[in-house]
Length: 70
Image (cartoon, rainbow, N blue to C red; front, side, top):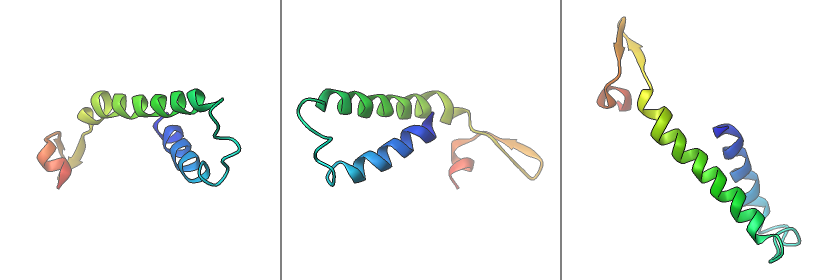
């Protein structure tokens, strides 16, 4: 889901200024709904998934934020 949201943002942000025929006042709500849905997916990923990231270093399970960021 996060990958799809990422691809949507890459495509829509780069193409909207170029193809203004598709970005009109009539479909503004549709574009904003899709943008906010992608933002919600990112937020859920940051709150629910990212805190559970773990990795193994020297045979030991590391869950500390300090160790993960380094």
